[in-house]
Image (cartoon, rainbow, N blue to C red; front, side, top):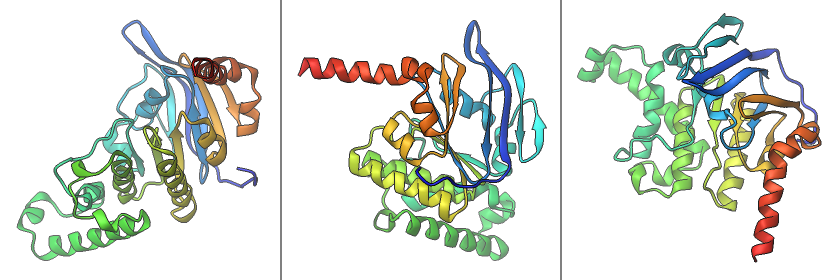
Length: 272
C-alpha cells in the first residue's frame, strides 16, 4: 500500500512461540504483533511454519513455549471455542465446506457462535428460536450481497468452481462478525481474475467491516499490494518484519524466499 495508514493498539501479540511435533520444530521463538485495523501478511517458503502459526493463534495447536495476548488477555494457549467466541475467525488452505449444502446454509453455519437459543428451541423452530434464525439469516444475506454471490445462494457448494468456493468460505468466516480474520492462502489455485476479485474483497472487508486481517499468501505481488506490514518466517524462525518495502529489500528474505521464486522463474524461462 502506498498510503501510510494509522492503526490502533495491538489486537494480537504472539511472544516467543515455539511448537514442535516429536523431533520436528515447526516454530521457534517467534514473536510479532497484529495492530487493530491493519492487513498483516505472514509469508515464507513452504514448510516455514505459516499455517502452524495460524493454528496456534486460533487454538488448533498448543505451543510448548510462549504466550499469546489477544485483546489484552494473555494466555499460554488458545482454545478453538474461546477464539471463536472472542471474535477470531479463519479460512483454511484446503477448503472446508459442507459440499452437499447450499451456499446460504454453509454461510449460516458461521452464525453458530452468535446463536443464543439452545438446541431444544432450535429443533422446535418456533417462537424465539424462529425469530433468532430470521435475524441471523438477514445478516447472512448481507454477507451474500457484499460478496456478490446472490446467483449461487441456493446452489450446493460442491457444484461450484474452486474460486467461488473460496469466496463462500470467506463468507462463512465473515458471518461470524470477526474482529480478527485469519486467511490461509485465500488466493491459492485462483486465476488472475479470481485473485483480483479476492484482493478487492479482502480490502473491502478491512475497510468497510473494520476487520483486522492476518493472511498467509504465496503470491508476492498480492502481498506487496494489499498488506500494511509483513512478517517473514523461514524454517520456523522469524527472519524479517516490517513494511512491504522493507521486507522486499531485506537480504535474508531475498535469499530465503524471493530468491527461490526468482530461481524458479529463471529455470522456467530456460526450459521454454
